[in-house]
Image (tube, rainbow, N blue to C red):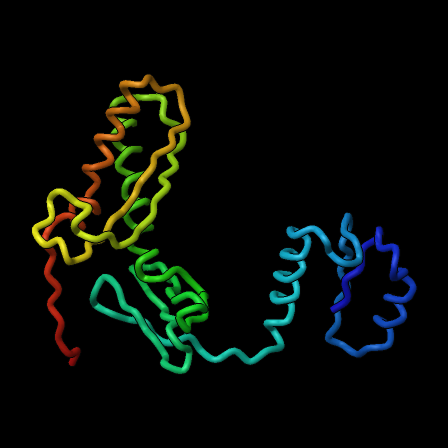
Length: 212
């Protein structure tokens, strides 16, 4: 595959044409209008990468995807040769979870705790959207900024053990829309009622067994 920009000041189109004629099929030529020789703009580099991958995939033998069928809501698969990289199927959706490189992972996806925080953030945004729509408030966009860490229980007034650590989620909300201060305050209160938060604050049980 040959890619060339009409604005390329380093390699002339004639050079590209000579190379194109010299090679055998399969071959293709793509004009990258508006780019420079080094693809210095990030969107241009991303576009070229996707273009090459789409073109080359026809000529590369790709192993079949592993079957992720399950009767449960979620299934996760990990090949130990891929360190911590875990493929997940949730309903019809696929995603990847991983650990950062500094703890031995490949950093190919969000960590399990990041997925947990993402679930809380998404549920918060959806809950606020539903409430504002029911109230017919002018809420156009919602940003949920969320962090997770473990804090010593002695920092929390409702803790019974001062030596243990508890999970702490810090959440900041950002609204776009024509909202009164009272409406924003009410949305802050509604955020605490999101279903995922209630699940995190409740006592959950996990039953584990071997699959037949």
